[in-house]
Length: 319
Image 1 (cartoon, rainbow, N blue to C red):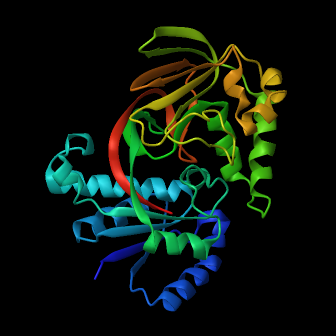
Image 2 (image 1 turned 45 degrees about the horizontal axis):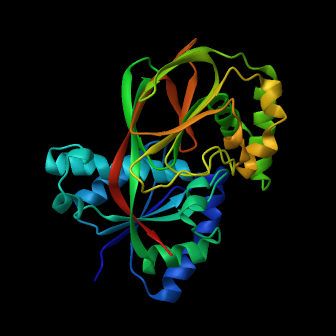
Image 3 (image 1 turned 90 degrees about the vertical axis):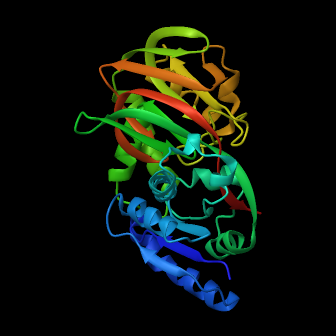
C-alpha cells in the first residue's frame, strides 16, 4: 500500500483552509484512502514536516494550502534529501531522485498560480482525487540566493516564480490585507497602490546576454506561467523545459504599467518591445536601494538575488 502523507496549512486563505479541510476528510472517507495527516502550526512549519515525512519513507506527499505552503513542502522534501544523501538536489543521480516522494497539490489561497500552470482544478475534492490517482509529471524547480530580513545570506527553492520590485511590495501588502472571498481584488488593489506610490530602484542584471542596467520597476524569474493571482508575464514559460524565463520591466513608470494591466493578465505584455524577456539558465539581479523579493506568493527578503534552474527536480501529480 502506498504510504501517503497529507500536510495541511489551516492558516491558508486567511484561515479558510481549516474550514475547507472537511471536504478533504469527506473525500478520503468516500475513496477509502488512508493518509497520515499533519497540520502546520506556524510559518515555515511545513518545511520541517515535509522533511520529517520524507525521512520516514513516505512515497507521496500531498500539500493542502496556498502556493506558499507548496513551496515550504518542496523545500522540506529537498532538505530531507540533502540530509539523507549528503548532496543538494541538483547533485542527485536519477536513482536517488527516484526515491523522492511525488508531490500532490490541493490549492486554496489568494494566488493559486501554480495550479493554473499545472491545470489542476480549483475544486478541492477534484484536486485531491488527482493528487491521489493522477499521473506523475517530472518538472523543474528554481533555486535562488538572497538576503533575508536579518540581512543574512539565505537560499530557497521554488516551484512557480521568484520576483522583485513592485511585485514584492504588492505581495507584502496583499498578504497583510484582510482576506475576503474577493481574493484577486486584494492583489489588484495592492497592485494599484504600489504602481502609483512606490519609487523605482536602479538595478543591473547579469545573464547570458551580459549586463543590463536601468531603472528596475519589476523583475520576474519564472518557472510557471502565472503569478499574482492570474497575471501572465511569461506566457511561453514551460515548467519542464530546463529553463527559467526572466522578464524585466526596465525604465517603466508606474503609470505606464497601470495602463498595461490588461496585457499583464492576458499575456500580451510579452509583445512589448520595452520589456526585456528571455529564457535563461542562471541570472543575477541587484537593486539600489534593495527591493523586496517574493517567491511563490511569500515575501522572504531582499535583493540581490542569484537564481538558477534545477532541471527534472521533482514529480508532481497531475491529470
